[in-house]
Image (cartoon, rainbow, N blue to C red; front, side, top):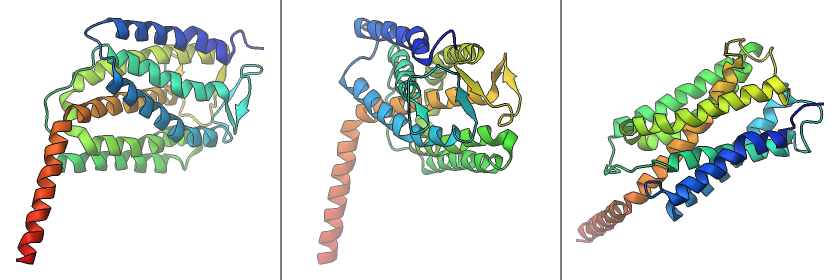
Length: 262
């Protein structure tokens, strides 16, 4: 029997910082806390649950990780209820931290096409590397993470790589702090036997006892959240430009049609 259940883990490590960060964001003038930010969070949460659910339910039957006796309340498919809750809580925790200092730069949505292509190709390259690593048992977990991460990175980088690079300092702070915190929380959970990571499915490299694959997973998940929200707020901030682009497109189409008729 575990000294701490998965639900108790949430009560100790994920829910309290969310409450504190939410309270701070709602009270601080500098923080971003409004309909736009919260609507973006709602979208990212839905995407995180929908995208990660099939991946998690493929990993558990493979024996990549499992849970301690009595650590979970119940499972849906192969995944504990508390794991689904983690998808929501991690996303919220990272977003609430980002909201403390989220800023939007006055940058046009018209980004160079070669920058977008480079972003897509980088994401595709990560997918390809993950696919290759799936072929060996010891690199299976690492390959699965890269294969899972690649498509999202390709979309985000393909859409806004230039803007994300411009905002790299903001991104590093937004990603780094919650990632470090979750690394510590994950290490504690593994140490307590709430969940265990397969030695045969990992390469055996760790960060102070935390498997490299676990560290990479939390890093990638937080990258998704932060980049997604930063791009979402940026697009909303440029709505006037979107409207003008749409108007230009309609006028160009009309001119083209009139020219053809003439």
